[in-house]
Length: 260
Ligand code: COA
Image (cartoon, rainbow, N blue to C red):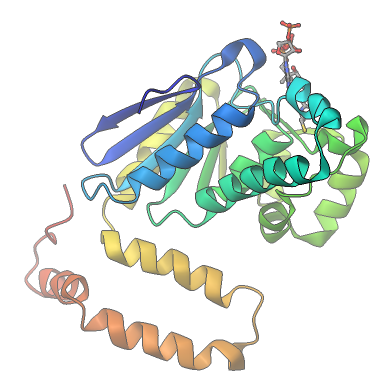
């Protein structure tokens, strides 16, 4: 695929996807949405790739939706507007339910939909000083399609404050509210990201995908309602070839085949 808005580098088991529109701080328009969805979708079937790192070229991770593009939607019909919004919602869902774990490498600014990408990813690591914010209300709009992922991570209390004020906040606060997992000095960002990648590579590829599905299934549900589901999942996984290999490797004091 010829990419205009992204760069994709595959390095052994790690795919690095870079948002690559630095002139507008990687703000995403329709083309970037399409490309990112397609790349993430295609990577699902590349067995050799086990971890995806999502970063941004230039001074910022992502300034959210392209406001020129969003503004132009006033001339669209309601159906066209629904189609565009659906494509954006589908992008966040593709990030969220990617069977390969996504580590986001966040620096500079992650605003609006940029913060949404962070929330939808699995392990966001940010540089200290990164600016976050759900600035939508200050633009007269709302953080609609990103809200399920954000509220799941930061909870209703922080969402009420941050969605309603639209104020910007820094990486340390993003860690406190659970939006990102770690904040490190910018010069240590790549090392911190690499550390997460290495930990993920120790996990069975199928087990990771199943663990993600497990979280999706049990979050927000009553224990009674997921009880049987959890029983079935462990019954399946412990007899799977990956489960058998992982346990055998432990008992034989060796690494399972998936550990590099
Ligand atoms: N959509 C379209 N263009 C954007 C953009 C966006 N979301 N964010 C930044 N840009 C453009 C700016 O208009 C500017 O264009 P210009 O060079 O033609 O003037 C260029 O990107 C660089 O922006 P600038 O503000 O000069 O860069 P900066 O590094 O000082 O600051 C940000 C970067 C991201 C902090 C700042 O641009 C910003 O706050 N953007 C608004 C983000 C936002 O509210 N997004 C929510 C969308 S729902």
